[in-house]
Length: 363
Image: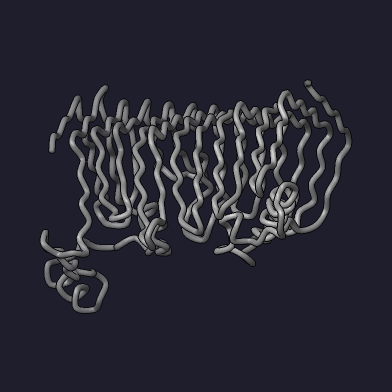
């Protein structure tokens, strides 16, 4: 039987407290329906995290309208074990979330769960989840700037198994973000910045996390792409950057911080940067323009005075156990690249132009 619920003009003000104990209490109640004796926290498999909780910042939340549709809701409890299966589709409109420093407005947010299966008992908890989430018309303002996103789409498949404190989590996910616009406020060292991205896509083909036998292991295999991205700056700053497409394929990482990527491909890169902008990135305030050309003796004096940092970075041996394995199989620069560097803090100014038709590096 399909059940539908509609609610309008909802409001909440306060802090949200996410507690593991609240979840274990619910599981204990459901398991106790068919148990011959009182169910303990150990029987849920979550007793290791008893007392853990997360408190979110105080928020004022309002929702104009919520439509909820539950097409499947089944629960079975036998011999102190509980099984729950749910299929539902929810949509909320006109969402507003305000905190002390930040305000978020969302036109619509929908959650469609095709599979939500929960099993608990005998010290074990298993969860299987698959579904899609969509958010449209997101606008955010905060202390560092403001932004908006037209559409965010996410689909996921997750399997979670907890056996008396040991965790096994595996799954996959895909995400698409359409038309992002961000504007960062001016700081003491950097001008106002505007970032625009046409599309961001990410595909996590495999994700695994486990804590079996007191050993933490994790592994992720993914790929991603960014289309039509640009960054520009106000107040006469000449720095800017734009790309037609950036794509990385077959990215892999694990608990030993071994990082590998099959290919990193950048298409249609164009960028200009200045000495003043680079100094600003590192928090250095602009220096007055030099009034004469530096001589070798002056540069040597500057080095002794600490103006120039010539510190040699520490080298890691290939046999060093702390050295991580970082590997890029192929790098490509296609459809041309135009790079420019300008330093107007010296006399005469330095201008470097670099035009690349195509570049490819293997290994």
